[in-house]
Amino acid sequence: MQIPLIVDNKDSKWILLGKILKVFGSRRIKQEMARQGIKPADKAGTMLRMTFIAMFFSQEIAYVVKELKERKKLRNFVKIQEIPSDKQIYRFLSRFSEEQFVSITLGILNSLCCRRGRNKAKIIVDSTDIQVDLNWFRRKITKKNLEDKEFKWGYSPSKGYYIGYKLTLAVDYSKKKPLAFLMHQGSPNDAKLCLEILKELKRRRVIRNGDVVMSDKGYYSYDNYLIGISRFKIVPLIFPKKNFKMNRALDGMSYPLRLFYKKRLNKKNKFFFKRLVKEFEMKLENWRKFKPVRSYIEDIFKVAKNSFSLDKIHRYTFRSVKKFVSLGVLLVGIVVLLGFDSKEELQRLAEW
Image 1: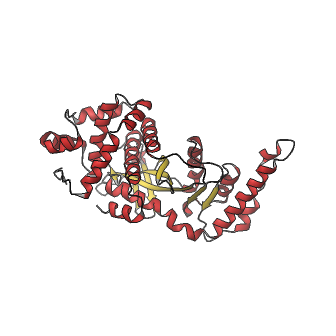
Image 2: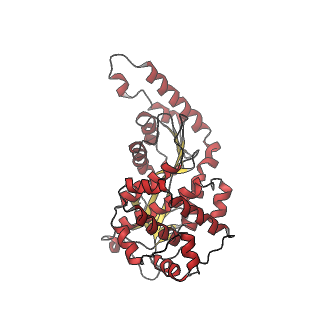
Image 3: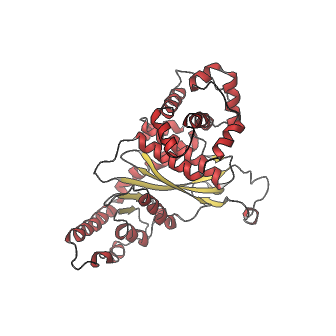
């Protein structure tokens, strides 16, 4: 349904959109875009603001262009005088790779948020389905039909079978901002993706020694506990399943071999490893206390899907989907950093 984009300065949704556009029009954001190679920054800002409006109201870019041309008040609100066509916007966005979009997303969020202190971070990791808008009820779509496509069949416990991708997102609970994300075709097992997201967090220099990385039972694996502690030096607070045995998890946790490479065992490293294992055991025994913390990321996903058009995407290549998802993550991150960071506010936003 195409709703008229009539600016209402008293409406909470328009007030929030105004704040988002103001943030994205700042000099700091333009400098970050230029640093990431998205130039010219002014033109890029105009194109992305128009894309944000389309995502914010779940409309096509062509419709936003039409509304801007017809409504002077809307042009003044967005602060755009020369309106590009939808083809120009798509052509401009296609010039940049999906990795540039990921870099600009995380770069902007880092520039908006204060630097991390020395305290340990609580990082939440979870996955959700990203569905492409295909009516597979009208005609049967088999795996063979999708062999030459970039999207695949997947399964979500909450929604059942779908066609599309899987988004894995890591969020800093204390700073309330997205830190990294990955995209995969279909719905690969979360436990197999644990190593990938930890590598991505390490590559981006996000996690530090002693950080707590928590996730739900989908990431459960004795190997993932061991990898988290011995390789990444973090507390892998992965919620256990019914058959979990603490002794089995602790049996494999001996000192990493690299500690023995030197002639003398470093006492400081030995003490750190012992403390890490002790904290892991204590937190895992009381994992139910952390369920409200971990559920925060579920509200992030609801906002992204219900409010910023990530529910069913009208894009069908991995490259275009990843770009669109990057902008969705950026929108959610900006909203959270603007103060919509409590569960109540996020749930209210998801219901708009």
